[in-house]
Image (tube, rainbow, N blue to C red; front, side, top):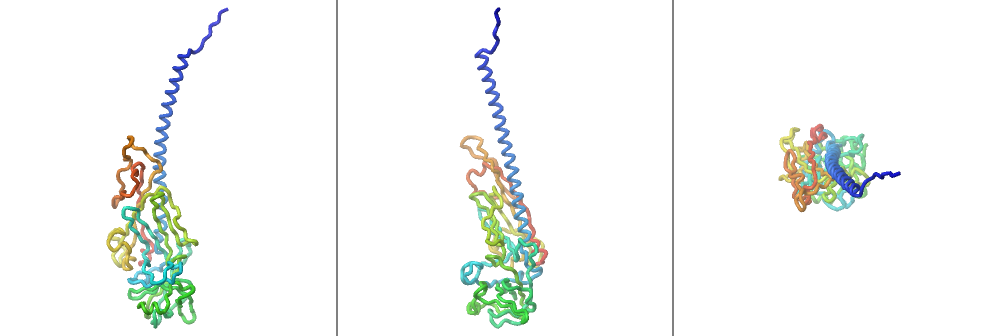
Length: 371
């Protein structure tokens, strides 16, 4: 008996394979396109999250600027001329002679020009220790015979051996290292030599006209950092690696170039400045403005806030629309107070997506202390 055999011909099989391959290509194309959109969306979200976290950390450290200086202390706000010395000890800078770069402003902005700014936050007590007591203040009872003479004070208990003292009167301020506290005689010694790295030899202070403080001069003592005189946290952007980094001398050993956040390409900051003896900000100034590249003592207490902008970049590279063309994913970057300079960004910087995050940070210790 005859039995027929049913099946596919070679032509039918080949047509089926072609249809299957076309379907696979369509699905693959759709998957690739969807995956690219997903990566773009995810990287955008990541850049925004990175910026928010980085800005939160920076804001938290900045709000505590000036921590440890006694409220209303005239030592801080009364300085116009600073006298300081280092005996080559690494703790005070490693060079022998007068220290001319001491600046007690609560925050310092270093202008980066077309590059990111650098933000230095300063404290008079360890910012990592919440129980750290503010600095103690007392006054001089008897005129110093020489600039190197011991301090006869009203209350020596406000200072401890190893403290730094900021002695202030009539605009003059001297940084001293307390080497001995004589409670019975109410005197503070600031001798040079071992453990007195900030104290010059008697002939140095005498020959260079250092002030001899009279009765009523203010004496404010505070704890020094490892490589003092005061504690600092420094935020900067490594443009080669697109990382926000932090240096922190409140740690021992000192932390250098600690990674804060990836994919941060820029940091810009400005001072919020109030008139003398006022707490109301009337102007915003850049570190590039005249007189603000290194704020003078008269301007330290005028800094009541800063405003900061961080620029974060997505990790997803987006190719130009045409081969050999130019990316235009982002054509301009700006804050509410000015454009971001992109002159020194990489040539292909437009092939990434960016987020600009900004905030205003009040310096609460300066404001609350009425400094």
